Image 1 (cartoon, one colour):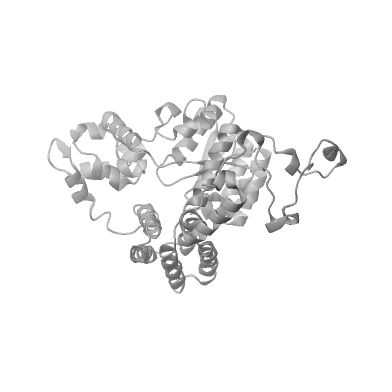
Image 2: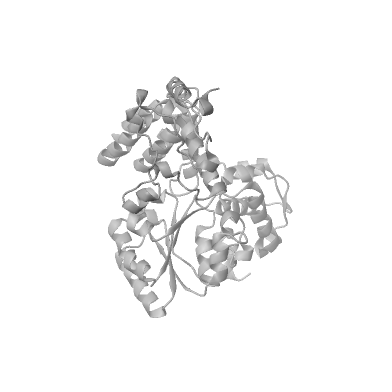
Length: 424
């Protein structure tokens, strides 16, 4: 191994160079999938990769550039601005074909994102942005409309094991250490689905062991990394572990654990808007119609912390977290949209019933658009029995209210209206 390569972290040494060597994200890179087809056809388009750290966003961007024969430029939104973007665009103009990868694109402000629009629109650059944040919150609409958003998932257990075994079999330094991996649980638990982290942990553990052969057990892993994992690092190690614990504590109706993890994030200097955004999502996903006020409070919390900032916004975050934790819970709305999306995938673009189609022109009216539509407010209790779903899926129930008092009232109303669907 060259001295230059030896000084690189294990995760960097093991970064795949080709799509065939890439592990994970089969929903995107598996044979016949969207990125597979894009790379094999050498017709890349601008995309946003949204997913947690260490799941292959940078690697995929490099593979796309390499396999499509494109000049590769990489910028970090933390360190770069409009000047650097314009410089890359000019170089791309001269090269004729270039891919620009922007890490943490959510950290670009509006003017910085605006500077990309013309080059993306004209095809001077193929843009790949990477973000750990919901792009609909952080990427401007004009740029988002020019990119496809692909969600990258944390690595599954089998994929993490494959990443480690690949390193043990192919990395020259690891082979020299005579490593024997007897137990997996600690490595898998501490990495949190992050491929880069599991390789960093493996390297740390091996470097810290003096005996030969180096036998890796759960006990040794936990002992070696204990001090390294004790703090909160908003840019890496425990960032996603703590926010996950925070959300799960609220979902589990434990206000004590919720404010504890909130305090951990505050102490670590976490962006209060990041915390507030997560609570907005939770308010719909885990509380929903069991308490509609939860979404209102969570949205107000985001607005308030944006205006006030630390240290006072900690009080607003605490109020919202404890309110959400002690609220009635329901994931009925979340499950409803999941069921509906699954149904759309299975059934495709079914024709909308003629009776509820829009009929702004004479021709549409002559074709039967809007015919036989019955205006609900003309009937008793503002309800009239008619089918709104496409004919082939008529009678389908997608929304099933939960057991909270508020949702029970919804269920009774639906039973009165839709005896066929809710008359049980």
